[in-house]
Amino acid sequence: MSEEVLEGTDTIEAGYVTVEDLKRNDRIPPLKALERAPMPVIDCLEDIPCTPCRDVCPTKAIVMKNMIDRPEIDWDKCTGCTLCAQACPGLAINIVNYFFGKKSLRKPGYEDYSLVMIPYELTPIPRKGDVVDVYDRGGKLVGEAEVFSVIKSPKFGTVLVNILVPQGWAFEIKHVEVRRR
Ligand code: SF4
Ligand code: SF4
Image (cartoon, rainbow, N blue to C red; front, side, top):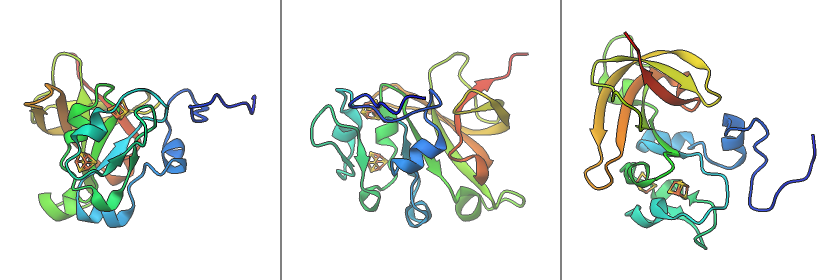
């Protein structure tokens, strides 16, 4: 494989953003931040002229010196408000509430579960309580998950689906699909 890298892009060798790509670009939230609040996982790794995530962030946790830069995040400033995921036109941001099972749900058997918020643009829109198929970043079926809640951003109209998944899936998954019956 060629070592040549186009200026303004990352070496996304798989053709999609892998967890390794995220790690290399400091996009996996540190445990300390995950213990404090839900955290965004921003897949955006190319220099494109786009700034809604930065502009909407109330705490200035997302930084771009120029409008064409990639978004960088200051984990200490992030409050987990989810506005960046609501505003992103590229559906590039998941919100991971890593310790949701242990800290908030407190349901026997769900101690090691996370709540992952995934932007969704297909129809039909999943409903609370649905069981949906869950796919990883490469489009491979990972398994099924329960829809905990669905919200529609009042400001941006983005639909965001919250699913309960084992913590081991939290950064791997990227898409859900309502099962066809
Ligand atoms: S979740 Fe909220 S505070 Fe955190 S980066 Fe996104 S907009 Fe900013
Ligand atoms: S709004 Fe979305 S696509 Fe635009 S820079 Fe931010 S993460 Fe990337």
